[in-house]
Image 1 (cartoon, rainbow, N blue to C red):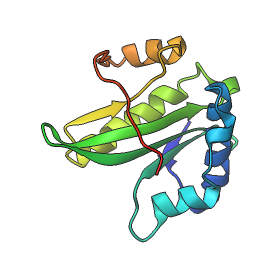
Image 2 (tube, rainbow, N blue to C red):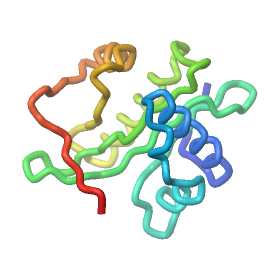
Image 3 (cartoon, rainbow, N blue to C red):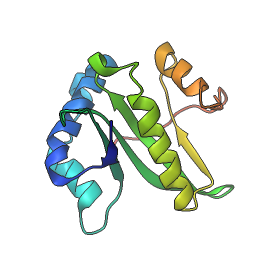
Image 4 (cartoon, rainbow, N blue to C red):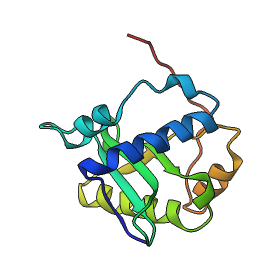
Length: 148
């Protein structure tokens, strides 16, 4: 059950997982990226993000994670987990744990002070999964964004 950084041929599968996640989160029309957009962001001349994939024994990509570095004026570099996705029919088989452990290891090697992410308040299975990692859930901050 290997987890590895994504290669060019993987991004079509990663994009399909992102579409699956958007459907699960009841926002399928919100995805405007393409496999090419993802590949350029992760494997371009100046990468903006990193992507990992989880492959089962027959080489099928069953999970993916996309992360990037953000900067906290209080904490320094923070590795941000944008998405951790395991295909629905492959959940509860250790894929999420393997992906998250690979990300934690990478973030530590790169000198990040923390790993941070968001989870929807109704996604109880994800919340319980993250609790196994002793994740801190912050109820104080409100997410804010502007479409530009």
